[in-house]
Length: 474
Image (cartoon, rainbow, N blue to C red):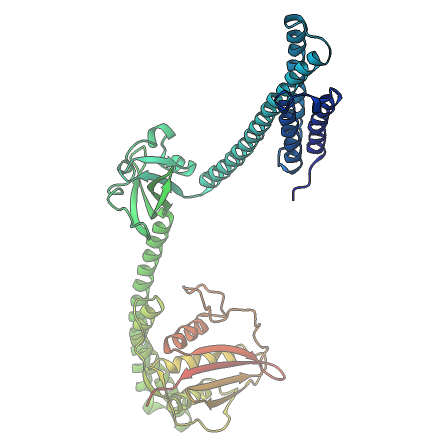
């Protein structure tokens, strides 16, 4: 039940008071002695006022509006009553109770007319207030929509099913260089060729690339997202176009740099191979001029030189893989053979360091290729070269699970900050925040193998490089 406000309660009380006045007036004239037809209109008017008074207590009229009902009722009673006095006394020359009854009839008629007029006026005023409030809400919603519409940083165009532009945001006007009057009302083909033909289905969003033509005739590459909406009660096409000219320029710059890197890679591989062929030729010529002690070191030079030449042959494919052009071929590779061979090479390269293998290497094959040795070589080099001890110690161990082989390379150096993205994961390019190109290539290779690599803290000091490689099926 609605709790009446003071205005509605006061209005109801005044209307009921008017009903009481009519009733008391009729009783004071001895209404029970008069014929029913003579007093019935007064009773009807009093009953109507009582009903309106009760309705006012339960209605939802706005405060202040409800007071119009007793006001018009009182005005009606006063006006009709005054006219009744003139009619009864001046025209009909009545006196006594008969004249009073006539006046009372006019007063009751004025009360009925006044209360009905008051109800209509109050209801109309409430309706007008409600409509104005709704209009204010709609105006606020429209302003918020326009702020959102114009605040979008992309070009937004709305055109009807015939291709006529019916709305455009401020960004569209700025980027295309049109005035609002020159753009809205014209066909969408003025801005975008064949846009009207590329109408999406009602339940889908169409995304495509196009060229927008500005008012000056310039071409602007854009990526358009179009969908069917309802605008002003009719179906329309909403297209949001994003300027991709900077992205295109960036793509061209990346392609240019990639071509330069490929050319540089070819030149470097060619020069390295030529120089290493000279080194190997000169080293082979020394075989008959060294004693047994020097023969071991000479053989290390020959093996390393041949390995460098082999790396230049593989680096072309590796460079294309890192650039994202090719996928590395992956085959079953013997983990013990590759790891032991690389350990022997690193012991010869770093005679001052102690590089040990804890336990034996299980006879398993992993998914990799010939470049797996580069993974272990770079991690072993990192463990020795970045060690702050005069005689670094590196311990290598291998564990095998149901589907992976886990190689751990532990050193006793200063360790690696866990917050540094040493493998450059999630970045493309050789300028990632790693500790060098070697570790970047380690991450790229292991990722191509379908494995993972990370660093852990060693106890009591140092770092542990952990390489997880998937086992080859079968």
